Image 1 (cartoon, rainbow, N blue to C red):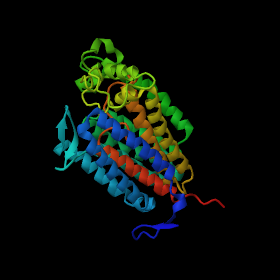
Image 2 (tube, one colour):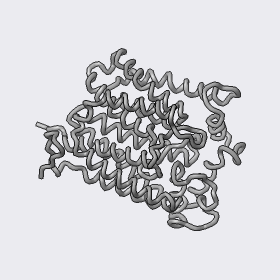
Image 3 (cartoon, one colour):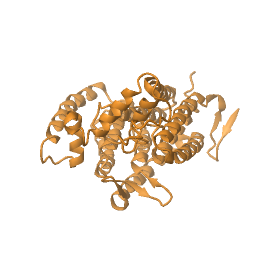
Image 4 (cartoon, rainbow, N blue to C red):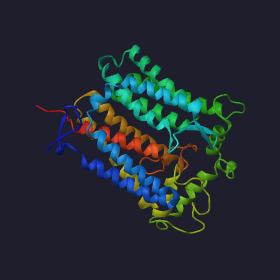
Length: 376
């Protein structure tokens, strides 16, 4: 069966449509709807609406030739910078951060779109320079182009999104063919530098982080000393996950000592949704969510390996990397492995912008899958 969309003159075979990936995304999204409803029933209808909008975006984008979309990579870059600048000057402040644009009917978080645009922009930028990827000029150009996004996101401030975008950029460069020698050199410089920076930012009057960001790092290093302050939510999150034991306390537990009913976590439907999963669904539920997200990452990588060109490979690997990086950071924060920093759990946490952007990313991967490499 042939599929054709709009007037882009691109035909697809239905047999190439990756329904396995769609089922995995739907499964974890349904879990997200239920867990958001359990964490705070007020947000469940909007989460359902977000999944619906995301599905629509995924299906539509999956039928548009990704190579046609990549033709507008410079336009996407300019729009991204413009939106991030708009946040600085026109953004809505909440909890000490300015990360949202109020559109009247919804609040839009441009940093979530930045992650997707970063993948698309560099998919085309690096594909055009595939033979020069290890030349100093290409590497410096790529770094120069990612720095404005990193600085503007950091300015909001959103340290978690900045780290996520930086890590995503590194993965994209690796997928584009960056040499192992160069990667080894960067790691040899970066790891000691990170250790040095951590040593500096925990000192009084350090110039790099805001006070609340510094306290979060200190609370991570010495949680007992900040048990009633910055470490409060993380300690409660770890206890909630542990209290769920193997099978959990049951969905939508109404126990007054539960992490949501006891107000031990301020907004459990967002950054600490994994604590609700651990408490109510236990170790089994946590494993199910992690495995589903891992399978999504693997499926994206497999589709990328069969892509017909470098741009398609970077899109698939980039979306898979984004899901993996953001999952790792979110769960690491919820379990106390990383300092407390706000970032959503893909397809699970409440947040319309994040949800729709992740679905859009999957739509791009599906389109790459519809145009597999032809083996002779």
